[in-house]
Image (cartoon, rainbow over all chains, first blue to last red; front, side):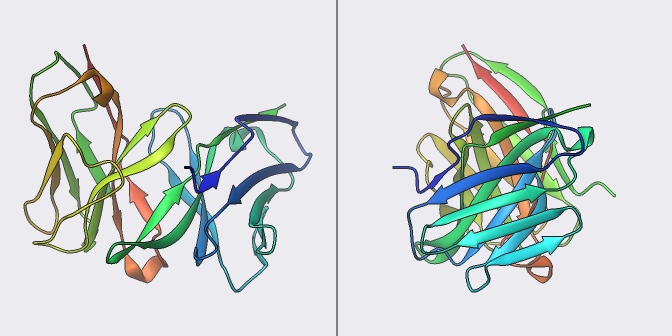
Length: 114
Length: 114
């Protein structure tokens, strides 16, 4: 049972346009949400995060929106650049045993076309 | 500025063979993690170490053992490799001052079990 789902395995966007990556979750006890970006042959790198008490967090071209009632978060990239082409993972933090852990989605491959 | 270093980058094993994946971080992080990444499955936590001297099971610990050798090093051992353990393995560490569960990942170790 996947608690964090990214239903779109891939997304293609024209350079300069907006990229919207989506993520759904089922556990209402998640208290923090993060996005990671991964290039081929590299490890994931942290991109942006949002606390469950917020509904929006912005960092330059990247904005994350959280809709708690719908258990949905999205990452907006404006404007999209070819260097943004990567796999994007959303992750949610919750308790597992005696420690907080991250649960990751399966990832969305973003391709920004020049 | 090495960050998280994993060795080896690639390994091919035969079923039943054993091996150890090594991980070292030079950021003075307390917590370290081992994840595996499989197609369509995202990143799944195998084991983690909240601090030196402690280790705990994650979501998919079966078939693995870990050792937190010191604050810098966290190794993952496969005692008797199985084809189901073919995967890309990522080591990660956290700095609590960067924010909750903001992980720094290594570049990954690609393991193939024949």
